[in-house]
Length: 92
View 1 (cartoon, rainbow, N blue to C red):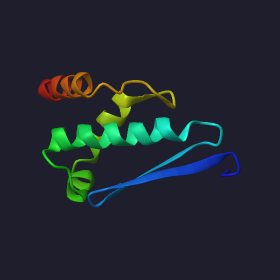
View 2: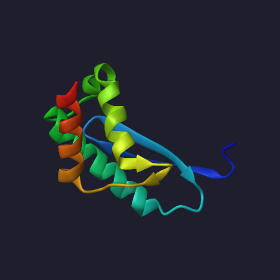
View 3: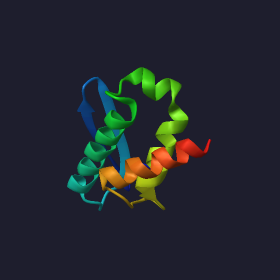
View 4: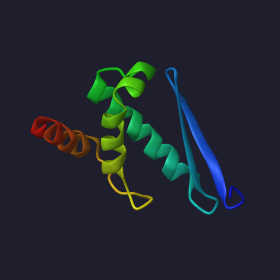
């Protein structure tokens, strides 16, 4: 199962973000996606920590669903992403 995959990870202020991707994919694109993901979470949770990830996992899924579509990085514009997530949150 992991013969055609590789692990890409990065450490941000107490958070380890890991991705399992295809072996032929570009590492730098995923490292940039991890960076954008953490930046969006920092704005959304006002300085994200591991407790935010544990107790608000459904909000994390929203961010991931907006960023990644069908296994590909879909949206990386931080302001647009955050605006769409806040609109979804206001509908609840």
